[in-house]
Image 1 (cartoon, rainbow, N blue to C red):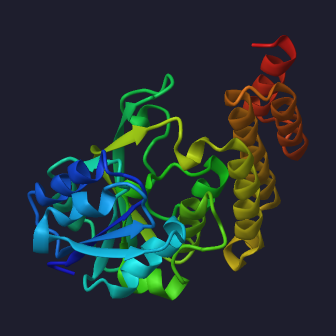
Image 2: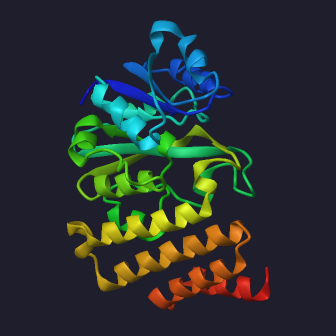
Length: 292
């Protein structure tokens, strides 16, 4: 596709403090978006008014609180672009994001992504996410399943026809819905990554990803679903065990970060049971036993 038209989807709920900066970062792109669709998901603050200040440059859709997946799905259904790029309301794009990614929107490529910069309450994370999670591209289904979700929603642009073919985000999932969609897309299409950090990803203590109980449950559901898929069943026995071990290792880290020591220990032990040679699981067990 020589000149893909990209629709930008911003789902927002009570994002008055950030939505203006998010929209401005889209309008400041070196390659213009075909349209910007903001879905106000039942906000009780001034989110809608802040988005409306941009006038006809932004299409504002308002509905009662229905969750981020339903909001994004509704926006994609009315989008007119060949591709859809997602931007969380509290994140921002650097100016060359769409321009760099448009060069990667080739035949056979289902979605593209890029590196990110961590800002806000980073809790010890490096400035560039790729320092701990290398960018992945090509046929990434197995890698994405074994390593967990290393792809940031605000970094993704997906072919609209593929999104609709897959049924979009699973509205039954309240967490890890992005990882679920990336896995389903990666199972049937190639993925490309722009190497630069083109997203400013804002960490907040109150964000959805900081709900450890919900994240742990959702992560297991997504991993088991992927392994039960046609593509997942074709993986080797070792890869399948490594995938579940990695899932429970991440769950252990999630529980430990929330101060749930015994839950973390249980998760790390389950990870070791799936794959006894897992260094991450062994290190996690040791940390919890030593109280570190």
